[in-house]
Amino acid sequence: MKILGAIELWRARFHYAQAPVFNASTYLDFLHRLAPHYRRRGAILIQDNASYPKDGEVWSWFKSNRHWLEVYQLPPYSPELNPTERLWQCTRKNGTHDRYFASQGELLATLTSVFEDKRLEGFPYTGGTIWPAEVLTEKWKQISAQAPSQSVRK
Image (cartoon, rainbow, N blue to C red; front, side, top):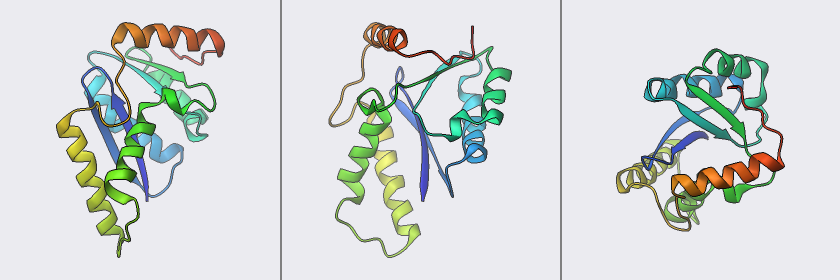
């Protein structure tokens, strides 16, 4: 089972969807689900370095949506900068660690329960903090200076 996820730092919530595989097609489907939530006010999407977000069809979609979406890649090997990693860590700790699931349905129910609990609690969560906007902006400037930007919004 694959889970695609996106965390909205400013309003302390997240979106997720189950997919059979990670590929450009399932990522585009996820982006299409996210778009209605952010088209009006705009968004900055910071992605990890998986291969499917770098697909030409995905970048074409980014370019056609650049009027409201700005896209950046995290530097390689930087899970400490990715809040989603802390969510997955929390999910393993509170939902899946040392448990046997007799069916995929049981696993999905557990994941859904943990995700909904975290969504209702609001993010921050165990093991990490959400940076205030000015701190995140400063950290992102430092990261951007070290790594070439792949922003599609100029």
